[in-house]
Amino acid sequence: MQAARGKAFIAVATLLVLAGCAGNGTPQLMNLRTGDGPDEFAILPSKPLTMPADLSTLPEPTLGGTNRTDAQPFDDAIVALGGTPGSAGGIPAGDSALYNHAARFGVDGGIRATLASEDLNWRRDNNGRILERLLNVNVYYKAYRKQRLDQQAELARWRAAGVKTPSAPPRKPGEE
Image: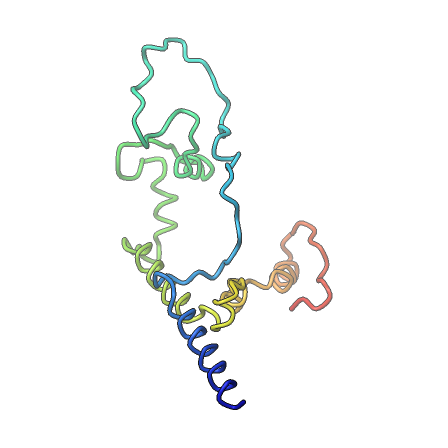
């Protein structure tokens, strides 16, 4: 009887150890199940379709290239900040004041790579327990809980400073 229990315990322990070792090494904190169906947002144009005056002026289609209705997030952000998109390298003269203000404390050219490696280390350190990984439990919000902004405290701080703020929903019961 005890030998059977011992074998069952060893089998379960082995299964848990193997489940913890599975994967490609990149932590998956957001374990959501999605279907393999079509994504309707991938096929809808984000900008209105327009017929050009002369069809011969259209560029040749390239595999993986862009088209006139593709979203241009960098250009859209430049326009939203009051800049001029599509300038040929460097910073346009009209945007130099904005750039100087944003870069007043220094600019790190490799910030994206630095943040990506730090975030990967953070996700590896907060990857969840063995059973959470085995059962595909979503541990994203638990991993980043310490970095979360307390929206109610921030709202109270801005209001106390006399800044007009938009209305916000009241604190939910049990919300930190």
